[in-house]
Image (tube, rainbow, N blue to C red):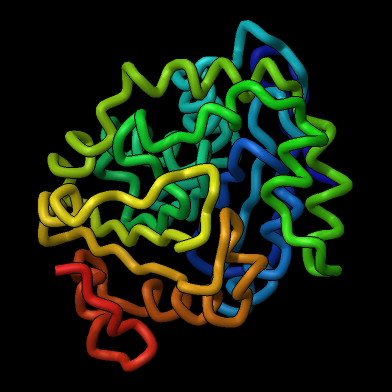
Length: 262
């Protein structure tokens, strides 16, 4: 277990591998732990960091820090504390929102992003995600398979207030506009059977800039990295193999990513 001290509190993270840094940011249900299969795959060529954000996992539970702005500052301070420079971000749900917001403020630091279960509009979030107790959310969103066991055990560590606070703020975050203004290559991934985050409409997808692309996982729910682990890890590997600044739309050239959205 690795920790840094920020704002006088413990921030928990884990790290695997060597190479260029990848930052994994978890979603509203869970902690760093459900990223383990993807981190292990990526760590062959990269140094993979996974952080527990404020109110989740083994990081401090401090309600004053549960705002989206404070979660972004956590990432800023974490990178500064460890002396990490240019990064790729792999975010999910809450982590996708935090990653996109961070990238909009620090375009010079973020080389690329793969964002899963990203609500491009505040109305895309199912109200149940905001109101249900954590154990209910776990049963609702996590598949009942051994691959999800670690996430199922870790998720109840989350402070419900941390979930609610960040979701309530989404109405103030114009994620689609932030995406449109970014020059950073951004690959969006969405489980077609995700009950928590509604799939964006074709009209919204057509507004994405050339540097952004959307891939749907037809057999996945809210956790594509657990529902279709091999496919998810392969997509991440292919995305990370693109040259710096190259559009993820070039991934369409490979048969397994030919699900077009236009």
